[in-house]
Length: 140
Figure 1 (cartoon, rainbow, N blue to C red):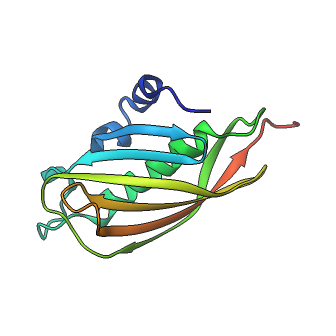
Figure 2 (cartoon, one colour):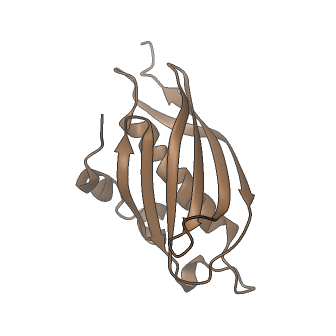
Figure 3 (cartoon, rainbow, N blue to C red):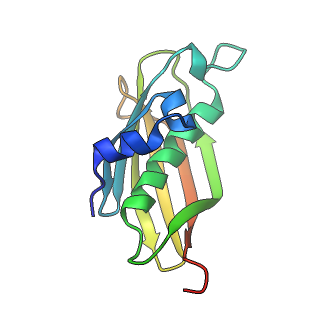
């Protein structure tokens, strides 16, 4: 099921997602897309893009993908493992994240994502994988 993008925006208000300026473009059916404009806030003290900014974008993108595809009756999810490989950087412009589910089970989902500079969509600056644990109501 695709997530309502306005609902995602409202859900993200006053959170790290809104603080970083992450905008969801699509989430559902095993796919998710998001973008984030690079600002001074996203840079490390050395002036380069902070790895945490990229991880925040990728984890958010995969998280909304998981949220959109929760099994019936599930209460929510939480990230239990993540890994990122950083291959490049961007000092300005917009980053885009493309994520897709590799596994969507009853207890876990595994997602892969790539982050690109919008100016260089042929060259990923980061590869990301996360495992999401599906949360069920207590006693259910």
